[in-house]
Image 1: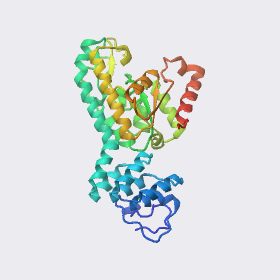
Image 2 (image 1 turned 135 degrees about the vertical axis):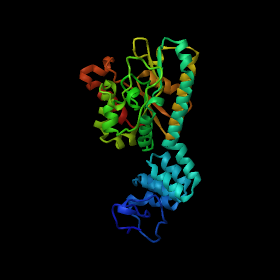
Image 3 (image 1 turned 30 degrees about the horizontal axis):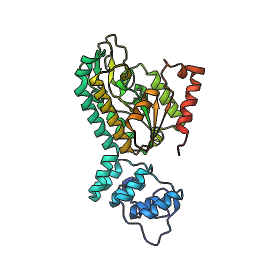
Image 4 (image 1 turned 60 degrees about the vertical axis):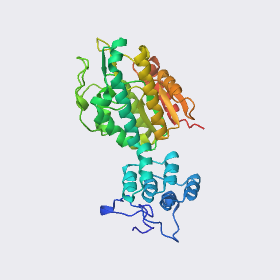
Length: 356
């Protein structure tokens, strides 16, 4: 056990080899004056929800150690309070709950953390696959491919690293373009951003039914999506690191499918109709609602008016703040005005505006 005077390790948390802290959470020593920056972790370790709430309301800081403490001690109500109020967790919380045999905490982490989000993505992927033939038959779309299949490992890498860091704002896109998520598995992503900045890893497959002019080359693809370069570049400028970005915002596409015409031109979901499209949009709406619920999202920013419209339909009746920002597409006059300065100002202002 570390001495409570150690400034680098929360009290009530043991250290392992090399000073790394494992997820086991022993009891908080009695009669010890707890420093303010450790108050939340120690309250969570003790399972004292009243004390935890008071510490949070008094402005005491918390981080993933608090969730590990709650999960490792089997304190479900503390864990729920931490998650619902934006405290980040990582896989160590799951390990702590499992080692302690706390199945309720483990289930809660599974359903509300990145594992729950991954399950929702897989369910959406299966539904989209079931509709592919009907979409091709009923619409002008000539090629339908599903990045949640052929670059699933990239997308899984994104979800596992970044969906559990406590973001309460969700940036919602429309669907993948041919040079963005369709290549790297990251919403609005580029291969450079995915590989070098987000450290996305995994393998890819060559999808059945792809357009012959759109071969899949994985993260070695050289062309960079302009919209993604703009958006991720702005997020980097605001928050710096991938971890800090995803403590504040998380990115999701409403529809995961890449839809292309005969010539290879991108077709967006708002340009097609029919019974299969209705079923597709319903599945995408349901997925959005699941992600928002599981992640405890309180605000959704539609990147463009279409995404805002889908969010308003999907999340009707939920206490979610929904707004929009300008789309970074080079085809948008707003995105290009004043060499992009007006777009950057618009998106920055919306991202940093606190909601009531």
